[in-house]
Image (cartoon, rainbow, N blue to C red; front, side):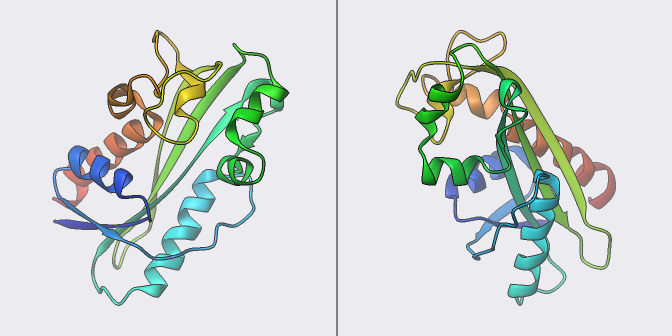
Length: 182
């Protein structure tokens, strides 16, 4: 089985390829991210856009979205996490909340099933916002410390691959593939 991953991020593709028991190939198709409050709906929108832009027939396709949801900020930046980083900068989060603020990373992965109903798989991990630590990973990794861990994902990027919100969503997807598609 082969799955196409509609993303410009090859790191996500490599991660999916390591978790899923099938070939994962990057499909670098530009999508427009709608400004809505649901990462699940954003993932489905990206999925539908990518499916319309490809000429790959009868193929399985995935697209994802994720965000950092900070309790003190009523879930902000949430689905607008990447937008906030581009416009303001991720480290400016610490201008809005004190280190130690409770937060949750969430991921949603949409699966396009030819001649079937699209599915969404979710994952989340709780933790806290901290002063930047570490140069590894990407995005908000240096300022997020998962619950029960002594390091940020910026200090130990391999920890992210093992424990992240995306890892959990990928495992849900893998279980679905194993039970229903293979």
